[in-house]
Length: 261
Image (cartoon, rainbow, N blue to C red):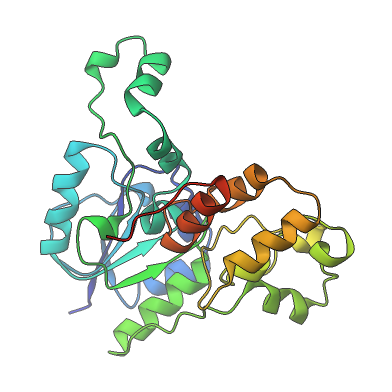
């Protein structure tokens, strides 16, 4: 019997599911190795079936999602988050910095019908997560690689070097050094293949914080280049604003004292 796999969606734009669908032939060959029992974007729906591997896209932002993610955890041998929303709350977690009720009141004609939490939080804030695959969207090759590792009874190997390493390998000219752009590459985990620097613009930190990063050094350098502290803070408090290292750096440059009690 083939191992069972599910892909679940929570609060998100569906971009990570589309990234998997765009894998094309690799996804078709995957169906020879596993039984895909739930993947609504691909037309297969079976929410309650126990599975060996559950990929989860999206953050938790409603009471219903809080309940559903716990049920998924109970029914899954491995839970792997895919993308920025699932791993660090996503762009929608920007609402965590303001009064969410005011936002809802200004957006919806009948806010009383909207059942929403005050915050958008990563999956790991609610259940145990076995592995995290970052990105906005996730790199489908990393997902396929993770599946192959798990099918071989091995832990997925996730490279956590900086985005700068990918730039060097591609021979890109550093946009931070030569153009003084606010590039987040030095503190960002590799994974996208240097998409933005390859077309002459700075990294947006879509793949989250790298290991052993130095946010203080990068932030200070950006200030030396003429960027305001508020702008530097916004660079950290962007797509992965709830990643602890980025959140702390963003609050630091905004001048907010953080309690570690």
